[in-house]
Image 1 (cartoon, rainbow, N blue to C red):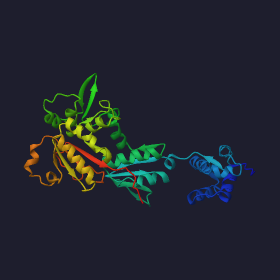
Image 2 (image 1 turned 90 degrees about the vertical axis):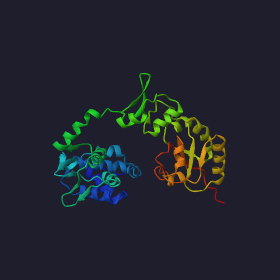
Image 3 (image 1 turned 45 degrees about the vertical axis):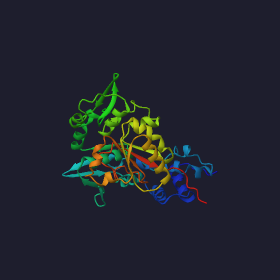
Image 4 (image 1 turned 30 degrees about the vertical axis):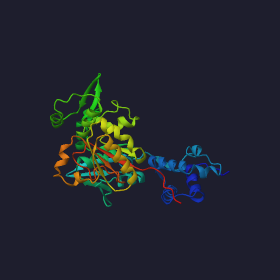
Length: 339
């Protein structure tokens, strides 16, 4: 068994005997030549010890004991500018300064709408000010840094939204309050559209609320029930093998017109679905003429059309007619049988 008496001994041992990553090896090597180390460096070193605890255990070295060995070098408290994140607004720019953190960098780069640019000379990120960019930065930075400091401008901005931190509903939502159905966070436009509609939980009312952009609170329906989930959401995914189940549901929500879109595949499924819809008295447009011809007068004779999409893409906005009361996306999770 190797006997290690100081933290520096551990660092020397790891460089020569443990298979370290390039970054970890470079950091541990740097510890051997320093006359003093910061608390931030010590914390990172302990994380590396735990990271390679399995390799260490092969030489009967216990990571929990190694991190308690004394340092020969002087340990000093890390200054906030080297350990914390700092966000400020300077002119029209959002500036972010922070110590190196590989996990933060990887996560920050992966944000699709990230417009921040790294300035190598100034060692800072910057982006033109927008509420979106500020929110993206603050949310990401707080995931990877224990402390994030804000300038007075940002502190003032954050204080103005504190009163909304407990707000649950940010869009028109049908919920049950004290036994009564109420649309919370409604808008003037929505009120005008709904008119004197009497709220209840019947399939037709729920479907029309959903069509007008009202979110149905999960307390209203059982999310484990396929039929209730279908009724309470405008876009609904269903397995191809189960698609015939929706025909009676379509009748319940008052659907009187169905449009098929997407690839003309699954011919047997299309034919079976067409036959069952016809028996239910629901008109079918298998050629999607209604979608591509906005002047189609025939489409105006129907009250609540539904689109059934045979497309493999999951994007519900593609080929989506504005008037569609509901969109049913077919999915096929059956394994492919390769012979």
